[in-house]
Length: 82
Image 1 (spheres, one colour):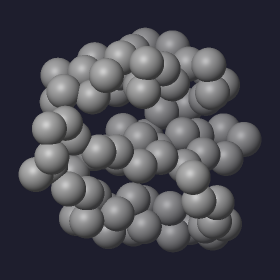
Image 2 (cartoon, rainbow, N blue to C red; image 1 turned 45 degrees about the vertical axis):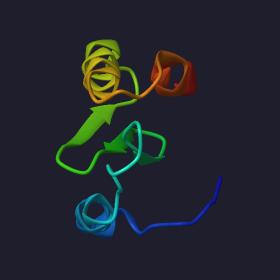
Image 3 (cartoon, rainbow, N blue to C red; image 1 turned 90 degrees about the horizontal axis):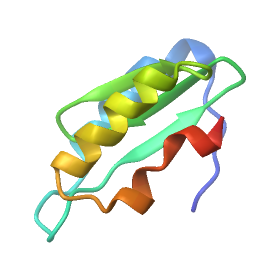
C-alpha cells in the first residue's frame, strides 16, 4: 500500500488519471482508492465512484461493481473503511 497526499481541488483529476493506468489483463481487475474526512474515491479502469463516507448504499454499489469484475469480495469490503 502506498500513501500520498492529494489536494482536494485535484482529487477528481487524479482519480481520472489513475483510472487510465489500471490493468485488467490479469485474472481479476484492479482498483485504487483514496479518501478524506468526507469522501471516498473508489477507482476502477472504466468507472469512478465518489462516495460520501457515511453512504452505505454507495459503498455497496462500488463493492458489487468490483465483484462483477472478478475482484474477490474480501478485497472490496469498503464499509469497514468508514
